[in-house]
Length: 171
Image (tube, rainbow, N blue to C red):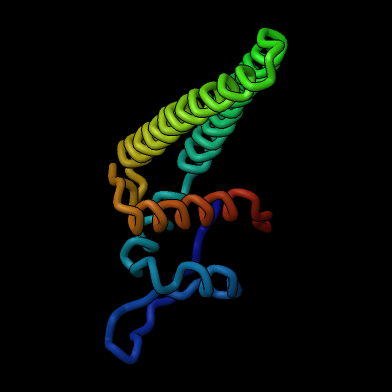
């Protein structure tokens, strides 16, 4: 079990901010982005290992998904290389071969763009799925959004949770 000591203080602008002792990396990276209430709620949700296990599970699923998507992209690249080799063998005339090569390269470029867009959409869906799981688990700061700033804060929170899960806590 991990307990986070959060100290509250008032900034010059009289807003409450939380400070985590002895974690300078956290201060630099997260201080300006995460309000005290959110960190306090997060600390409470991390009092048992459930959230840590959920985050680790989501990370494993994400790694498997990323590897699978990368393999799909590599398969397309290899297929395109084979098509180009077949084209070079098929046309003995250099001029015809060059024209066909230009057409094929444009086709390959369009295929790659469509595939990359599909892969990005799948990754976006994975992010949304993770947000749903963490929101349902009651982890503060997590909700379904595609707002880049909100997603960035959620990434920082996940990084923080993962760092905490790796810390050795003395008995």
